[in-house]
Length: 303
Ligand SMILES: Nc1nc2c(c(=O)[nH]1)N[C@@H](CN(C=O)c1ccc(C(=O)N[C@@H](CCC(=O)O)C(=O)O)cc1)CN2
Image 1: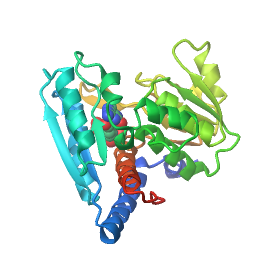
Image 2: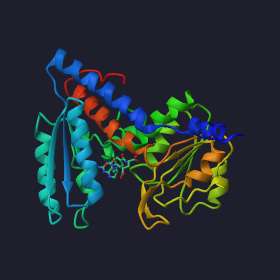
Image 3: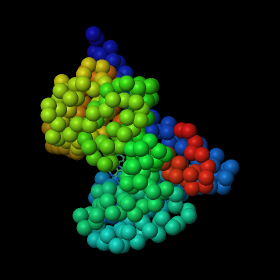
């Protein structure tokens, strides 16, 4: 096969999350404009950042920018890394009561003096656009209307866009975090997949992964999933965002999957960057729109 034919074959396999996210943000923006024109409602998102973690600062800045671009109101709250749990809880309670705020997001990770679970569970579940509140986790697990965590929701959208109906597919989710692994497994189950959750104590991880039609890697270990862990033709969703030092001494971003090996075997694969990452903020905007509609007793638009 010629080099250009080979390159074309690889390009066809890549799931372009950046492009899909841009389209989703446009659809959210159009729905926001309609909501405003027909009901005089402007969805509002409050984002709380505690401390100065450089990556978190970038994510929060991008969230505010994209929120405004979609025609929503953005409220940013930046607190020092010495903030106490009580101070943070007081702010969350104030935002819970604020009628112009339809969505509240506390950027993670939080400084070590703060109990993250207690903070997340203080957010009004109706404004919990991260979908991390125990009530939303329970609703998702029991198949009720929930606000769904943004990263897994974005993964599901990419999978449905590429594969269509997911019924009967064997999905392996690598990682069991409350933020990605567990909700991802629930969403895939809701889409009628047969789901395995694999983790650090799973026996023979490579063999478990090779059984997957759909493999979602969310372990936070750079390039852990090798090419020979993947069944030929499988769809691979890489949730990892890891900064490592390259051979040239410069930092580069890699996923949890060894992309160059995996792309040769997989039927379709998300790259890092430009795969799952951009979907996280696009889905946050979609969740904020949903929360605002529900607050007014309106149906959330299909996006
Ligand atoms: N409260 C929350 N905290 C965190 C979440 C979350 O969903 N809710 N997720 C991550 C960070 N995150 C959003 O907050 C996020 C991560 C990555 C991206 C993204 O677009 N990544 C790009 C690469 C960006 C880069 O160069 O660093 C990509 O993958 O293409 C967006 C949002 C942890 N905290």
